[in-house]
Length: 346
Image 1 (tube, rainbow, N blue to C red):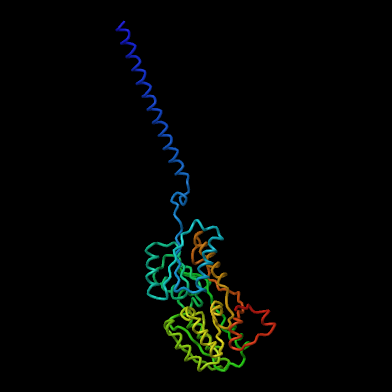
Image 2 (image 1 turned 180 degrees about the horizontal axis):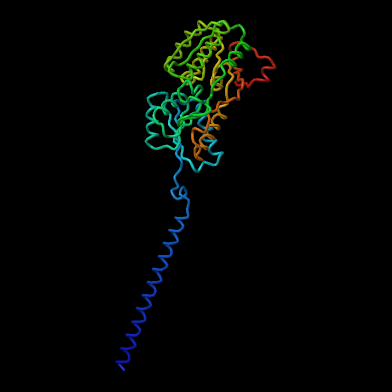
C-alpha cells in the first residue's frame, strides 16, 4: 500500500513539472510573438513618425518694434494656417538692438542645427548669410536684397538665401507728401547709417529730390539715444521730414513724432507702424501679408523645394496711411475724399 502511494505521488509530481514546462514554453512563445509584432510595427512606421522630431525654425529679430513683431507673429500664424503647428519648433531670439548679439544668435542657431533660419531685417539677414552656406535662410523685410549682397538675381537665388522684400516705393511717399503738404521747399532725412535698408532708401529719396530740384538736409544717428538731438537739429532746417523703414528710428519714433508735432512739421515714414507711433503719413505695406508670404516659403523648404527654385518676392500691396491726430496737431486739414480713400489712424 505504501509503495502504491509513493508511485502515485511521483506520477503527480511529474505531471505538475510537465505542466510548468509547457506553460513556460507557451509564455516564451507569447513574448516572442509580441516582440516580433512590435518590431514589425516599427518597421512599417514612417521614419519621421518614428523619430517624432520637429522641424526647428530659428527666428532672429534685431529689436522689439510693432512692425517687426507683426512680421514675426504672422510668420507663426501662417505656419499654423498651413497645418504645421504640431510639426515645427519655433525658437525666437531678440538681439535687443545690439548688432553683436545678432552674430551670437546666428552662431547658436547654426550650432543647434536649425532646419530653417528666418532673419528679420537686412542686418540680421547679412549676418546669417555670412555665417552659413548650408542652412536654408528665408529673410523677411529686407528692402533691397541685391544691394545688401544677399542675392544676385531675385528670380534665381543661387545659394541658400531667399525671402520677401519690403521695398518701399519712395516716389509714392514723396508724391503723397506734396499732395498733403505742397509748400515743402526743404526735406530733412533722418536715419541710421549702419542700416543698409535705410541707406538704399535715402539714396532713392535724394535721387527723387535732385530730379525735382528739391533741397534736402540730413541728420544721421547710430543708436536711438541720439534721435532727440538729431531731430531737434533737423527740424530747424527742414519743412518736412522723411525717415525710411529704419529700425533705430522706429524703436524711438514717439520721440521724433513729439518734436515734429511741437514744430508743426510733418514726418513721412517708410512704415505704417511709424505713423501709428505719431508720424504723419506713409504709403506703406501690410506686414501681416509679408509674414504669411515668408511662412509659405518656409513650407516649400520643409516640403523639399531647393532655395534656388524659390524666387525672392516683393510685396506689391500698398496702403496710404495717415495719422489724423498728428494732422490736427500740425495744422493739416484733409479733404472728405482723402478721409474716404486713406487708411486713417489716430
